[in-house]
Length: 180
Image (cartoon, rainbow, N blue to C red):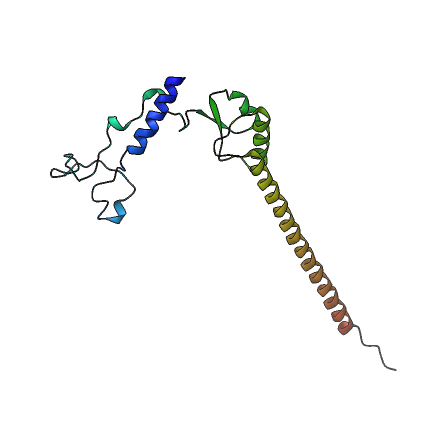
């Protein structure tokens, strides 16, 4: 385990030193930024590894094989989609809540993880997360109730207006009594 920690530390150091691999002429043409293509031109200085022309990805920049897939702190990430998935997490693992999980299930997962004393990647403090979520849900519920009440009031006003219009039309349409 100690060797693994050393390797993780070494990987973090090498990844910090790793240059940003830019596509050839990305500094000149804006639309080339953000995507990597291997230079294949005959006169390409980048392909020939000339000084001052950037770096190419190479095997030397890779991390040790034994730490592939580990987090920066050296834990094995495990995807969690429900409370039952928390059983798979062991002592050297850390949970990652899937992005498709809704807020209600997410709260259940966090409560269970807190109870089992498990780590969740992306959460520093479980209590503050739970408080924020509960406050957000309460405010959301309050807003939805206000909207519902406004809709109900509007519907009632429309119904009253229809009734008044109906009464007015009935008064106008009443048959004229015969005169004698």
